Every structure is written in C-alpha cells, then in structure tokens.
Image 1: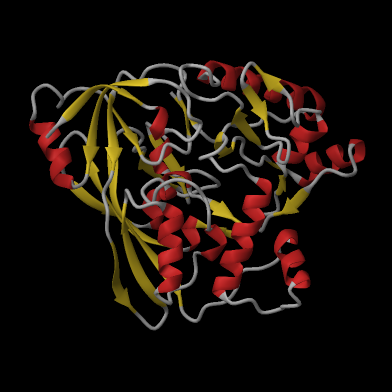
Image 2: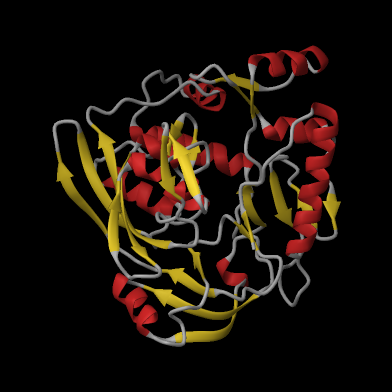
Length: 356
C-alpha cells in the first residue's frame, strides 16, 4: 500500500485552498484499508476520510493520514415490484452517477443532479435539493471500521439521518427516532452505497424554480430527463462552477424555527423566505437572511460572498502559488456573517462544511 508524503491538497478540495497532507493514501478497495491497518506505521495514526473535497474548509496542513476514497463501480443489485436497487462505489462522482441511473432507465435521483461530491459522501451529509433528500432514496451502505478492518452494513435507521446530518457526523452517541446509536465520525470509511429508486416513478415538484420551468416549457408532467435538465440549468444559473470559482456549495444550513419564532421575524421582516415542514416547524432560507444583512458580493481578503447567491462563499483568488483565499479568511468571513445574522434575527447559522 503506497502512502504518499507531503501531498498538495489544492486539487482535492473544491475551494481550491492551498494546503498539504502530511501523508495521503488512495483507497480503491477495502483491501487497501486493511493493508494500512496491518502496517505498524499507520495502524494507530489518526485518519481523515476525503471524498470529493466539496464539503471541507482546510485551515492549515492536514496532520492525520488522509484516506482519499477512489472506490469505483456501478451496478443494479436487485429489482422488485417497488424499486430498482442500485449500488455505487463510494468514490464515484455523485452527478455522474445520477446521470448514469437515468441513462439506464432508473429514475428517482434527478432532483439531486449537479450536487458536487462523491457517492460515499452523500449519506454523510444526507444531501438534498428541490424536495428530495438522500434518505428518501437510501437503501443501505457498506462501511469498514478504521480500527478493526471489519466490514458492516447499515440501513437507514442506523444512519440516523437528519437535515444535512447523519451518524457519520458525530462522535459519542446519537439519538434518532428515540433510539441511541454510536456516532461514527472518524471511525469508519464508507465503501459502497445502495439506493432504492421507486417504481412507479413520480416527479417531485412544488419548488418555485421548477414551477417556473414548467410554465416556461408549458409542461405539467415533466419526464425524469426533463427534470434533470431543469435542475442542472437552475443550479448552473445560481451557483458557481467549482472548477472555475472555488467554493463548497451552500455554506450554511437553512435554520428551522418554531411558528412563534417565525411570526416574530415576519413581524419585523415580512419578506422573509420560509417553508412549512411536515413536523410543524418552519425552515428559513439562510441565503435570504444573509442577503438581507447586506453580505452579497462582500469580501474578506480573498474570500467572498457570491454575487448571485448569498448562501455560497467563494475563493476570489487564483488559488495558485498561495494567492487564493486561505481557510482562515473563509472562516473569518463565515463568522462575521454569523454574527450579523444573529444580531438582526436572533438566529445562529450553522456551517455545512467540515472545518479542518
């Protein structure tokens, strides 16, 4: 098992922040993990699992051994009356996998098109967009214990999914559905993920941007491919391409509040963008909160707030030769935004990316 030393991480994070890994191993199979665990030099070393690097802010060089997940593979595992069960390796690019499922005639992930990152990272973050969350399509996953090398399978309940949350983001114990689960943060590496893509397929609609596309195309029953194309067009119009402008997508989670809290905010700011959730709580649009505090287009050093979407922080520098934004600048900007939103609305925004 080859472990590279002093590896530049700029190509491996979508913010294009300049940093280095003290050591990095490319993981293409569970055998690679076991080989590392059997090596006395690495078995007890702290480890950091890196997928597509689209949900991480590097504030310095990374001291733990970086496990760069490159596990490939896509296949139909099973087909039932209710669903196609499709599996993908953790290193597969998420968007490419979504496009492939549609090409095979297995729709259900089209609302999640163009979300950056890898398949293995998708359950960690419980990614979601336009009315669909990963947990809605999740069947099970295989992971490997980074201490014992044992491979095990988890179902949806065991993953303790929440809004942009899962058992993989927590240490200690996690309470979900009234049950306690051991947190798996930094303890496991996800190998493969399986999805249950529903039969018969029905479009998930109801978002204003998609409604506009339906009106524009005079189409009330879009096909899976049409929905996929629309979602891609909507995201490209709103969000910067990480290959061109360094960013980590939505930087803050949309906060949820009680109806009473929402009524209080509406009394002061009637235009606040909000959505009613099934459990009675109300989700506020973090981008609107940030924009209303005047942050759109502002910068701290080489870190800035994207002009078209205040929820996205960007690297305004070239990102080469140390000229781009540092992780420190990104986090200074993020904290300033948190402070101003809290002072105006009494809401503390929670960052989505992992800060390392």
